[in-house]
Structure formats: structure tokens, C-alpha cells
Length: 275
Image (tube, rainbow, N blue to C red):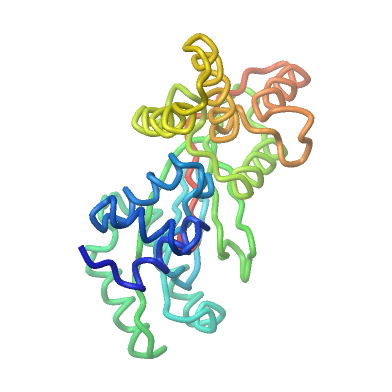
């Protein structure tokens, strides 16, 4: 099939591979961008992490925590200039206020939110979209990266910590900052989507199949690569950003021991503009 120059450029953008490698992968995958990226990874050509396959939308992530409940929203605009507009900030905060007292699962279908966005579009003159939203309850801590106003920025994180010691502001903030920086896929291996692990194993098998090593060595290499993948992609397995000599799991255990309490991470949410 005919592969367009635009499709080749798109694959180059997300993979970091050369033009010819991208064209061959697209041909082999029948033009399927996701499959072509996977083929490049299997051949060891693509970078390990896939970037967004589209241009990053502008806008803001907003977070709000109130009385044990927290909401997080991502609202997109066409330009970064608009995201610095006080009227846009007011819109995000208004939608957060609705979210934190609403039980609606689909915030973007709530008429009050639709009206707010339509009014903002009329005033600001750009297309504005509520891309996603979520709410959680519990012992919540939050962090906003690249903040432009209180609770508004380019990356927002919420985390729910369970402990008999309710004063966890230090560990809560540090964990949120770490999550903002390293973007873990899950808390631990136990809650990581098994399809992600299976896909990674498939890629590693393809990378190792032509090494000529015996099966027992290949099995050990597979185990080592999967272990490294889990360490790099699960929150408790990652090296702590503030102190790379220890993992996040070790940091939490140390804090709990020093404060004579138990700490468990129930849930975290991370939103990043355009990601």
C-alpha cells in the first residue's frame, strides 16, 4: 500500500527512528502506526517510550482538594497564550468547583459545564475542550507542576494515602512530585495491566531471538529485562527522584518506620497536558 510522507514523519516523531526504517515498518504493518512502532521496538530501532502520536494540546490541568475529596481536570485550548488568560483560569476553577461537589461520572455531559465552556469560547475566541476529569476521596495530597496559578499547571497529581498517622503532608508531597517527574504506570506490579507486561515480553523476545544464546540464558535475560521494566515503570519500584539511592517503596517503608505507622498507597492520578 502507498505510505504518505506525513505518516512516515509521524512515526519518526514518536519513535526517533530513521526515515527508511519508518517507511518499511509502516509497509509491514499495513499503515498501522501503533503496530509499526511496535515493530521498530522489536528491532531495537525505536526509543523505549512512545511519545504522544499527536501534537500536544495547550491548556491547563487543574486540581482541587476539599474535605477529603479531590478533583482533577484537563481543559484544552488552542494556544498556550490562552492558558495564561485569567478568564481561562476562572473557567478551569469553576469546572473544578462543579466536579468536587458533583457525583456525575461524565462531567463533560453536565449542562452547567457545557454552558461554561460555550460562554468561554465566545469570550476568548478559541476552541476549548474538557478532555478528561476524575475525582477521588480519602486522605488526599496533591501537586501541580509548572504552576501558573494556585492549583493550575501543566501536570497535576493526586494521591490517596492510607495510614493511622494522618499527618503525611511531607511524604504525600514528595510522592506527588516524584509521580509528576517519572510518570509511573501503576503503584506496583500487582496493579499493572497484564497486557502491558505481555506486550513488553513480546518485544523483548523479538530483540533476543537472533542472539544465538541457549534457552536457559535467554530465560535469565528475559527475567532481568522484565525486572528492570517493572522497576522503571511501577511507582514503588522506581528510584526516588529526590534520592536515587533508594526506591519509592524503601522511602515509604523508612518514613513509616520512623513514624511508627503503616502507610499504603491506595490510588494516584496523574494528568499531563497533551499526554
